[in-house]
Length: 522
Image (cartoon, rainbow, N blue to C red; front, side):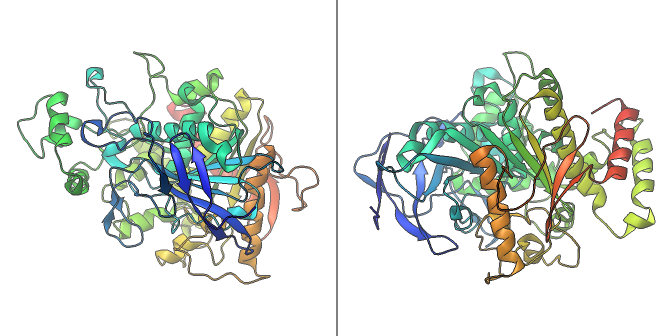
């Protein structure tokens, strides 16, 4: 039975949602702004998240919940709240006697851990809800509210509070998603950029075991990230120069009013650009931090089917960051660090590496591709390295893709007026998976863009349903093979879907030579 204002009961109380329609005009149910954690405010600022408390009566779930404090990509104004631990759920059907539980897809947004949200303007569900899945999109703490780096364990400020927020949301899904007709035993986590890095973290973290069963990493994995960190005492000294200890620093930082925190964070990052909020390797016990590559090689991680990949001109994002304040200042060191194969400035091998790579990328055939170096070092090589390592250490399939499609829903290039570059930029695939306010292109029957939407949605949801993006008998009429120990199979997603092997071999070769030279063999 259809309901205009559906009511669902979860562990914390009752929710009233509403109906929306997908790309084909079919109805589905929408529940917005559902709390999964207590507001992390006051003494809970910087702390590990705690589960949401019950409420009385029927909670209105027809309005978007607040996101974490950041500068909006649309309005360029600071928006959001510390009270941001909420999620959205979309489902074609609610539980009934004649309905079976459906695969669940949980979206973790990107934004460099400093911007972004699950807002329906950003990640509208109308495309993915063409398929019979349950979609969840989450908010989590960003910036230093979610990724403060504190060394003193007695202060009870955990590393990666934002990651813990995500984990709490996944625990909420396990507890409640049946009430939306979702299957808690068939959960796929998927995310892009910082969201992809987050998902890779959950794959490697024992604390996330059992919370998901498949994983999609779009333009981001842990081999993408540099090792940067914040200095909490140095931060507090911007306000009180007499701050000496982390305990004193936390007292200072907890007393910054919510409406002043973003301005303080911006001021700090302008002064110390390498001290960005970023993921920190997780301690697997009280004393030991094990590098992510060693975790993968050990085989001691959450082995699930993986789908990952990149766009063919990711590095355009460098031009966007250079010419806008999208993620704030201070991103240049990250690109420099990646382009030097993560060698510090005082490493004697750094200049040799830079000279060798500089000569390679200045070749005539690459000279017109201004940002290929950034594309390779930050995105393509990390994805290929991850795919190969997971293939070597797990019997679960690993599917690799390259997006080369350049069409009307490649919204990132259009939003920032970078259409003079060829190919697909960082974030450009999102306009096909989600109905986003960023994309100005209107869809019309029979055109490439709507065909591409259906292809992306079918591939991603097939993977969520079956662990295989092109199962036997699929109507895409292709077979996307997983990476194996002899061949790096991948799917090129362009105007056509073209299965291929061994992407950009000469570029992979030069980077393998670099890794061999510095003794960092991947």
